[in-house]
Length: 249
Image 1 (tube, helix red, strand yellow):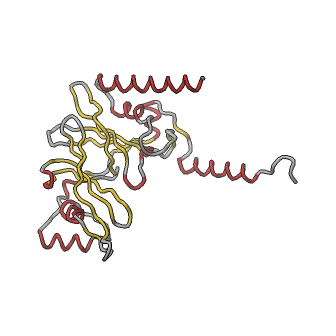
Image 2 (tube, rainbow, N blue to C red):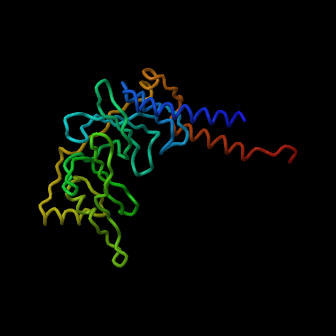
């Protein structure tokens, strides 16, 4: 019964939090993210910060309207090879409002004109393994994030060659591409005159370390790194599994 009551209480608190953050302007997006991200969407199940953990922040103009949006994530919200789940905040009169989430890599991405959809936004690669995958555009219309597929790279069932619209997207917008398609990309650039705009690449996010998270935001930080915590847990399990059963010889 107590467990049921606790569960109901958590649900009610979460709903209240969502209502309040939607109705009230947010003064600090980092503080808001630290609360909001306790609801697990992607990444680690255990929402604990360790010594090696970081919060990532981008301040960028998503829709080319001369106003910068704020994108916030952390090392807790890593989704394997797909990147990190970033929470997006737009500027309002006295702060920011939360408008959605997108998957991005903290080490940077393309942000600029996208001819294929006649829009300005982010282009992000999502891998499916073996050189295959797809490019996605994230567009901010001033109120919400819109996701659009731009093109895929697939393996031909007969020739096993990589092919698809995604190779053209790579050739047109990205200065760095996978070794699996580099020859095809260079050929397209030579044939069609594609020259990726280096200035459209957003560099690495600002990193906020565990020390600042603890000092400024009151986050409880485990004094171990996440890797050390995993090693400790494995050692504990190994010790438990090898312990003699009481009464056995």
